[in-house]
Image (cartoon, rainbow, N blue to C red; front, side, top):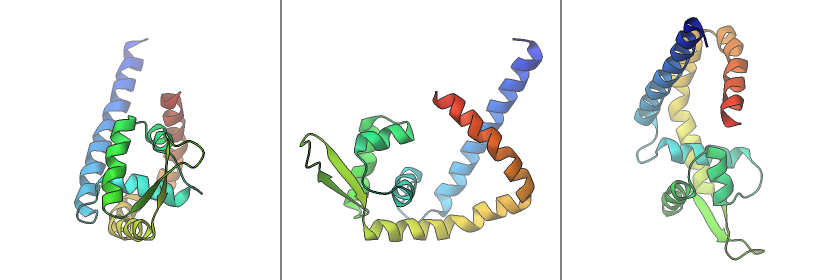
Length: 145
């Protein structure tokens, strides 16, 4: 690897990591009280997908350990945002579904974060955002494999 490629790679990942930290900080400040980014992420996913998911499937989707996902799901269940039931086909497994309260909490979170994320897109310009999305998706795909 040449020095220029190495410098480019370091610059790319440095920018992504810094942007991630800044975005997480901003999101944490505007999410409804008591909601963490991980909670919002799971609720948002459960709204988009159809049907229930197992904790293992959710852990795989979010690239976290099963223990971390169990912790997040327990907090969401305590808040009334998800329903967790035994899997009728395999008593060792559980299944997770979003509750009506979870849908409402997710909607409130979207309302809270929308002004901030829309402002960022407006400042960058929609065309520039559209142009960078394929690159970011490709990068994510390469990192996932």
